[in-house]
Image (cartoon, rainbow, N blue to C red; front, side, top):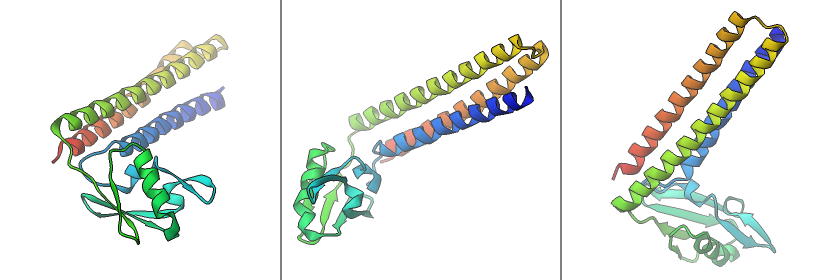
Length: 187
């Protein structure tokens, strides 16, 4: 039975860590005033008769805090890349210089910043719900083990351990959201 308990706790930790990782990747996609290459992660390009992610047909870098550069590996894809960026509906205007594409990222308005903060908070709430679901699954499994002979004291102690894991993960989520909100609101 100890093996099952260890497996349960490991699984709960893994699920919570996966939730935090997913939240971090979701937050990276939310724009904060600075230009980042990850802003173009959703861009798909029609090249060589197939649809490919932008990072498979070009290097994406930042020139400065307001400019993204896209350097295609094959210059014949310049127009396809520009079209892909426009079609991604990111509100960006790509400009080709014949060698590469420059994208000036416009400054965010106060209203737009608040929208992004709301979106970040929404992502955080979704992550918290996921963590609470992980807790519920772990506690349900502990109840099943209690029915199979696990003592009531041991069950209560393990539920406390699961709750501590949940609290720890929710604190991480809150810290990520606060940091992202500060990033977004910084002009």
